[in-house]
Every structure is written in structure tokens, then in C-alpha cells.
Amino acid sequence: MSANALPVQPEAPVPAGAPALEVRGLTKSFGALSVLRGIDLTLRQGEVLGLVGDNGAGKSTLVKILSGFHTQDSGEILLSGERVSFNSVESARSHGIETVYQDLALIPQLSVYQNLFLGHEITMLGPVRFLKKGEMRKLARQYLDEINVHVPSMDAEAVDLSGGQRQAIAVARAVRAANKILLLDEPLSAMGARESRLIIDLVKDLAASGRVSTTTLTYSSCATASTSCRAAASRSTSRWRTRRSRSSRS
Ligand SMILES: Nc1ncnc2c1ncn2[C@@H]1O[C@H](COP(=O)(O)OP(=O)(O)O)[C@@H](O)[C@H]1O
Ligand SMILES: [Mg+2]
Image (cartoon, rainbow, N blue to C red):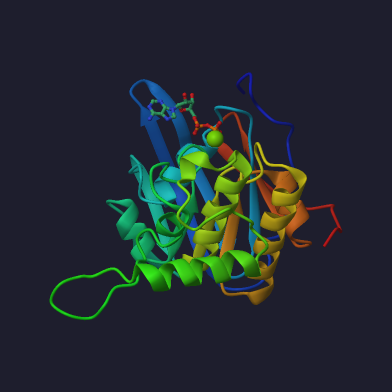
């Protein structure tokens, strides 16, 4: 048991539904530092799962492995029952996994619409790849209006937006692009009440659609976003336990 161990959590039954994502025996070390030691997780279709752990427990490291940013030392990742291995963020994205990182939400020098379409740009057909900038600006405006994210201009650079606006745009982009799994690392950190509400609503809508399974890396945001929230908690930075949300907020 280490200093950052959490209280023991009772095991919760895994909800019904096909597994969208399974993690088996995942380990990861950085040099001599063993961060993840034998992580097992199951995320069901349409489920919202929260991960709980103290600072340094390895939550962000797990997300970075699931999104192709880091590679695990050992262990398996299965998507819809098929074993997968990612060698880049692009390869995880091509499997339908979208991620909002805690520390790398948007590219500061790109505009609102460029960030929103990053990696999913609309281009004209033909031998040369021309970006349809006007259409992307228009669609970006429509989409952000629809979900109540207010920014001065689609051409504003991300660096000039507030932290909350940047985070809201990053989540909006991922929600739009995800078609299997959405990973949100501490999505409500440093956010005001309005933007927090907005993100919770986006995750709720997504969960209700049953289309995408979501892992949100705080138990509180998971419990607020879903009545059927489970949380996986780290103990001794090596084991994850699940429990059912006692929250009945919806
Ligand atoms: N790229 C890295 N190189 C070396 N150590 C790292 C790296 N990323 C994370 N760590 C270390 O791994 C541990 C877990 O970090 P992290 O996954 O960010 O935890 P959490 O998100 O739960 O706060 C910490 O001790 C952190 O310093
Ligand atoms: Mg973290």
C-alpha cells in the first residue's frame, strides 16, 4: 500500500452491454518509476466511466496509452473484442478514439475553426488537397452556436481565448469526431460554472445516444454527467476498483 492509496471501494457489477473497450494487465514505467501495474478496465457500449486517483496515480498516463500517445510496456487493449495496438495518436483516432488531454487541449496558434476541424479537415476533391475554409468557418460557427459556446470570431486564435473557452472547444471537437470512445482527462478543471454545465450536457447527450462510450477522469464529472456512472479508482497506483455512483442527478 503506498502513501497515495485510496480507501477500498466495493466492486460494482459491470453493467450489461457489449464491451466497447477492455484493458487487461496494462503496465507502464518511466525509467525506474512504475506508474501502472496491471490495470484492468472494461468500458461498455454507451457507458460513462469515471477514473479516480490521487495526483500522480497514473490517470493521465493511462489516457495517453489509450489514445496512442504513449505505448504500454505490457498488457492488452481490446476494442469491441478485437486486440489493437496503437503506434500514434492518429492510429487511435482511426479506430474511433478521441481524446481531450489535460495538458494539451488546443493548438494555441491555430484559429477556432482550424482547431475544431484539426485532423478532420474538409477538403475539395481533386489531385491537390485544397481546404474548404469558408465551409469550415460556417460549420464551426453553426456547431458552436448549437452547443452554446460563444467565441468572438472563428478566426480568433486559441491563445486569445479564456481557459474555459479553449477547453469547451476541445471537448466540442472531440465529441463531434468520436465515433467509439471519448476520453476526457479532467474535463472540468479550471472551468467556470457555465462551461462546466455545457461540457456535462455534451457528455450526457453523447451517453444518451448510446453511440459512444466515455471515460471522464474525475468521478464528480462522471457522476454529474450520467446516472449510471461507475468509477474506477486506483489503489496503490496499481489496481483499479469499480463502484456504482450514488449520485442520482441527471
Ligand atoms: N512522460 C513522463 N516521463 C516521466 N514521468 C512521467 C511522465 N508522465 C508522467 N510521469 C509520472 O508518472 C506519474 C503519473 O503521472 P500522471 O499519469 O500524470 O498522473 P495523474 O494524471 O493521475 O495525476 C507521476 O509521478 C508523473 O510524474
Ligand atoms: Mg492527470
